[in-house]
Image 1: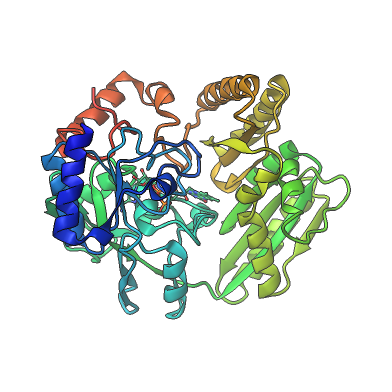
Image 2: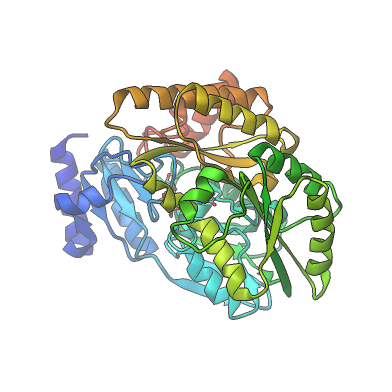
Length: 463
Ligand SMILES: Cc1cc2nc3c(=O)[nH]c(=O)nc-3n(C[C@H](O)[C@H](O)[C@H](O)COP(=O)(O)OP(=O)(O)OC[C@H]3O[C@@H](n4cnc5c(N)ncnc54)[C@H](O)[C@@H]3O)c2cc1C
């Protein structure tokens, strides 16, 4: 793709849709050059469609000229998925931000793909409903991005991930054609294999413009506690015991001592002496049910070496605990300017082994590694903190991540529990999928996008 062809395509887009739909100023391009990984690559232009028809026009004008298109939601991804590594034209979905319908009787929402998750949560709550997938980025990340990444969140333990709530996806193909879903919004066992492929396709198969999502009733009662343990290994061991006790909490989140130290700057949390790790546990259900479940959980915690338990007595205290949990990622910036955030996931019973491995690797490579995450799902966010100006530290951090992935695979785990592959984990993908898996994935990519127009250089690489 030459600058000349890209300039021609951009000119054609501006002529057709108006110059306010296209930006080429360097200061704007810079804002769309990165995601939460902070890996940067400037696009040639950024476009801001306001409708599905405009997305189609942009994509067809780009693909006619051989210009790459990169779909983008809010840029909160942790794997570089929306970073325009080959330049090209970023298609930002931020102006496709309308909730088109909430059908309370069918418990179905229809949204444009740029709607922010938290906005849907608030609208659904007005009908006594909720959209269970609740990534910690919910106040920023878009539902299109959530679907493209199959986002999870604390509630995934009980309620599943985004995929479990998709009831239809409308998307635009590499050549600007529209694909509409089969019978969207109907039943939870609808047959539409394209939905399954688009969900977690990481923006490589098409541009999602409209989504039908299943909603659930908001539980009547919620009980939230913060339980402190002496060590991360003890807390990780308690997770399995809690989940074997016959009740299924809505969330079991682990926060290690380094992460706790960071969040102390954000919220007023009084940490007991000797605490080296905490578990944020929530039960939910009908009136009385959540309390009953939490009583069972508390008995298990008592037998699992808990040091102290704080119970959120009011809705405000509950929100404070969750605000604390959601502030971990941003709070880490206090200890180092950069981080490599890996979302490794192992069978729950192997969590203590994973935690020991992380501690061992942190010591071996002399790095600070705050660890937290959706432990109930076996999914831990291991944050390798570093200063990218220090070449030796970068080398040590990258070596540590390689060993972490090897250890995860040895423990029968996966290198991605929810953030996806993007560009940061590409080199490890063959280890996870095996050669046949990689070939098969590239065939799927080729069937959807023969010329490699949509988000090239990402997850599903063409062979
Ligand atoms: C503080 C913080 C907390 C987080 N917590 C969680 C968590 O709990 N659980 C979790 O799963 N993730 C979490 N994430 C990661 C991230 O928020 C999710 O992956 C989210 O789904 C990305 O949404 P986005 O709108 O920001 O997408 P982007 O980052 O803009 O894009 C992500 C990928 O989706 C593609 N994409 C975006 N929109 C579309 C579209 N309309 N059509 C086709 N492809 C598209 C892009 O090309 C890219 O490959 C967190 C991130 C941060 C910064």
